[in-house]
Amino acid sequence: MSLDAAQCCRYVAAGLITAHALADFALEQINRRHAMRHAAAAPGDAQGLISPAAYRTSVAYTLAKSRVNQGAGLCATVMLLLALYSGLLPWFYAEIAARWGTSVWVMAGFLFAVGLALALTGLPWDWYVQFHLEARFGFNTTTSSLWWTDRGKGLLLSALLGYPLLVLLLWLGDRVGSAWWLWAWAAVVVFELVLAFLAPAVILPWFNKLTPLPAGALRDRLVSLARRTGFRAHSIQIMDGSKRSRHSNAFFAGFGRFRKIVLFDTLIQQLTESELEAVLAHEIGHYRRRHVAKMMAVSTLGLLAGFWLLAWLAQQSWFHQAFGFAAGQLAVSFLLFGLLAGTASFWLSPLFNRWLRRHEYQADAFAAATMGEPESLSAALRKLSESNLSNLAPHPLYSGFHYSHPTVSERIRALQRGAAPGRSS
Image 1 (cartoon, rainbow, N blue to C red):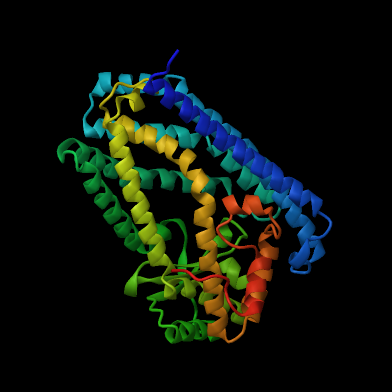
Image 2 (image 1 turned 90 degrees about the vertical axis):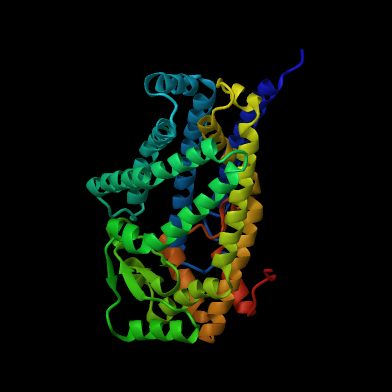
């Protein structure tokens, strides 16, 4: 008995979702067994990077996170399969359309409601990670009140920013004609650029308190670094990351003269001035090597390809019928594409991660050349690995799918050689 296109699509989608889930589960198993085999002492170049006690704790942290990842992954897969194959989505769509019609405002609300419902299924896992797993290993510093406030703010931002964008995209699909996807792509690109400008000044301070780095030796040192590397920044800010977690980070946000250098207060507590300078030099290295521009270009091209594929699928009746919908409903095309896109793109992650790791090597090399020595950055990487309980020796297959950065031992080895492996175009 032959299968029609809708049935084939239905089975292929189920196969891709299952394959993704099994691959993720297997990768976690492989990485856990690898960690347990080296539980007593770190293998190879990873030996001696952190204290033996911290290494044993990092292994326990890795194993605990892996178990949670497997549980959360299984739950997400079950929810995705239920959403696609239970008939709930077509029923909900029919109820919405019967009560309020199919205007772009209503359909955007439909998409927003489904996204919110699926996001809520992940809240118990997020809560467990924050207040059990992270607390168990001494990282959690947030309160339940602040945690819920953050989620409420995130939901409000999604409504204020995401809902109007959905309305615009659906309106373009209704009014512009067959080239709607090009206009939609351009609209999203503009939206992301505007958001990148607004985030440092409007969104980031809504969640965290940012204060100028006080005058003193550290500020003078970082300002001098920015000047001699040609990195223009509006200010250097300290972010109160310690009110949520003991993990640490540094980044810059914004563009041009509005760019901010942001340091977590936990980072300042953990590193010396020369190590902080080396970390910032690494971040500036990403800017000077045009990694940010390259990533934006690749993301923009990927978005273009995604909209082209979405527009093609929107014209295929079998795509909608495979999951119980009538053909010709653009909002449904957006929904189904959004639910399935991650399942397919998962298999491309090793290629993308390999490209990103080359960027990290190059930024490290820039930092070492700027500092005139590799020791400061190497020492910072060791301290951050110990304070964050990083997995020093993940299984290569696991890191290929899940690590956008090389391991600490790989980065330090490259720094000691005095050159980053490979060259980026």
